[in-house]
Image 1 (cartoon, rainbow, N blue to C red):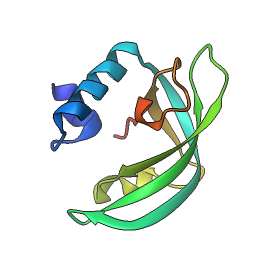
Image 2: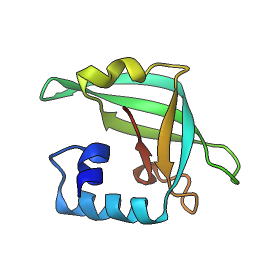
Image 3: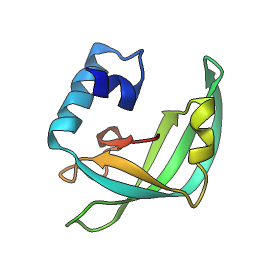
Image 4: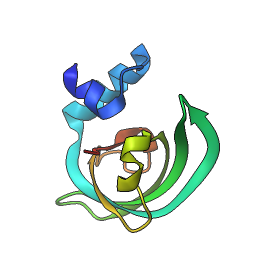
Length: 106
């Protein structure tokens, strides 16, 4: 479960833990370029919830775009800027499902 906390945070619902475990089992590591970033105006424990448009690239699969809304810790916000390339874990079998894309921030 240590990986789950690192990928998805401490406060995960049981359903989210199951989704994360499934993604870790079937997902592939790749990278994504942030094409658009919008602040939703929502804060969770002072951390912003943002909407991202990502271009995801996985080895051996065509690139695709997906829109994902996530909470980003203030200490990691500098990694999440338009044009940034970030590591991701994604399920190539369900490319348009934003629940099957996890940001792997440092």
